[in-house]
Length: 364
Picture 1 (cartoon, one colour):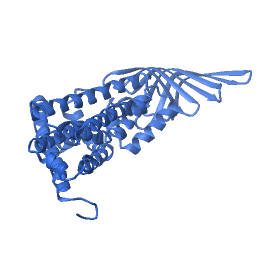
Picture 2 (cartoon, rainbow, N blue to C red):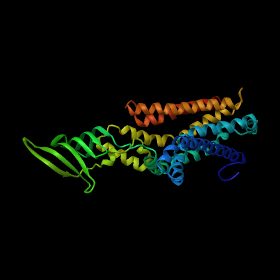
Picture 3 (cartoon, rainbow, N blue to C red):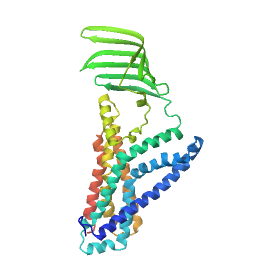
Picture 4 (cartoon, one colour):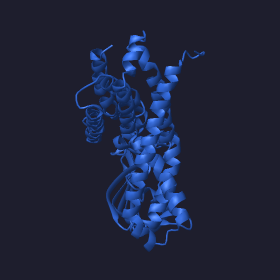
């Protein structure tokens, strides 16, 4: 025994847990890479992607994303697989008969779960966002087919406090917004409104050029109207914001994501829940490792007819149920039915109750 209170049996379980997890991870990732390569190989060859870029810019950055995406499933399978083998080899019975309590048996499992949850949290919030920047850039160059030659419709944004803009449509190919308007408020009072046929980004001067405009200014009971053909202006807005993919948030660290949510809140964006869910999910998902570990241990420590296959089948069913439930709760949050915080944590709360029930009825 050492200062941490760990015994040889604890090291044995931790080694089995982590060893099985990373073995399953490497095996499944290898299969996933083969299938992904077979699907995209024609695009890579057609667009001239070099072997070095395919390996280091794409797949080396694809692996961490895939690892975290299915880490809960790998955790469950790992726990059930090696614990079931221990149970059928009567190792669990020997431990309990030696005086070890079932609660004490869980100690090395939760140490392993802590290591894996820290591993998942670090990857999700710091490693994967940087890796996704390179992966997305590779996909744009060698896999996607001209993704930004389209228009966005009905754009409403608050570009700074009290300043709201509207565009009927925005063309990414020409960086031009059509039927543009800008309103300025002081408190609840409208002080000026600009309307124009279109607004275009000048990449040389880094400014917006407004065409065929008129400005209506209100000062108490007095009003004035100014018309013109052309005017330059600076807005807290760049055309790159309209060229972002829906998954661009996956390339943000947790700090960048928090700052972006603050910006969207200031702008009065209507899709802010989508990004709040991503933030809450990054915090809630690593915690699921502890819950799924407890469920896996309580299920696999008893012998049942059908052997390890029954345990693995039950574990896979619960894992997919957890993932499916998380997807459902996210959709409710996007629609506004649930708060993002509650949507991210409801699967953990429900499966925590399941894990405590299984722990309560587990043979001790």
